[in-house]
Image (cartoon, rainbow, N blue to C red; front, side, top):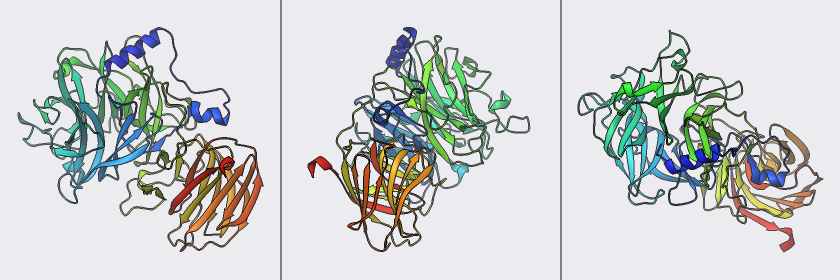
Length: 541
């Protein structure tokens, strides 16, 4: 994690002055206020999240693996949303860095962007660390590959070169250092934390040094017993004006035992293992409602008044790597240490970061948030295909995938969209979300109305969700040919809703539960394309 010393000082000053950071919201909030003032977790699907503030613009840049075969950068105006995605690099079809593209991190040094990541030829034993360097100062532009880094044994680090993942960069007293998780010898499957001084952002200058043992405490082991191995990975650097610490993930990423530990630099030389001191207890671990937490990063709010902790957690307690991304406040102790607290339960209302833009622009299909597995959305030329299963899915799970547009929508409006169910006669729901607030990952994880088509049962459907449950409001029989485009129109006027299918009115209904919110697209266990999306305020018709 790059140093943001000025930000830390500002936040530390705020804390010492007694001004509180954002906390879970306990007050009842109207839907109109809720849209601007709070959000809920998880904010996205994904693993190994990495986000930084753009040093030249009031925005965030998220760097994420795309299907383990590419690297994407998402840009957003809030740390509570990934925003729109740009693929900046594709792995080649074959070769040593063609598969298993893991944990990319985006850094900005010397007017260039650098993306550190791990990749292999498809066999985990061949994972090595690489870096992409931008051709210019555009983070969404062209990149050139460098590497692999010499992360192995011997004075050159190549005797032999050894397994490495999760590389990050620390700046300390005018020098840069690379930190990563690596094997101690070929095929050992024993992960330790390593460090080396950097000659440049693309090359190491010194042999690697192991920072510490990986099993000092039982809680660092895959399971907390002497019968299981230790495992340290995902080092991240946090620096305040008085402390330099490395927060690392340990336990098992595929189990509920995943958690965070912390090392502190207490000596002068980062390359001396004796200069590092390990804390005796985890600094962040799961609960009954949020399990397998780890691979964290942190970022300041846009106004530099707060820190925000970004991490992934497992979708459930079953072994595996199906994960989602959470965001919550991070505070700094008077001694300069990061204080992580406990994971907030899903669906907890959290006050938005200070400095967020509270008033989105006018409605546009080009600005949106997506809530669902990243491989289940493709978007081009203002057409959204949601729910298509890829040929090589990575840790796939369904969650009622949805796109929510960011711009304002009039309280009274007409929305029109063309749906294509791609010939699937047993397809389930596809349609429009409206007056939506508190969106999250999950089938019914939004407070909203839904108007949709169900080809499998030849129905037009209207219902609402409360964040966890679905309630049907009305249904009507219709004729849906999944081989042909379907036109869906929604008219909203006050508490009155009318749904039209292929020009015919099919449902009229009244409900007053929700009065304001965003508009979006949603599927339920369905592959559907949405195009020709038009929103018209009724006052202008």
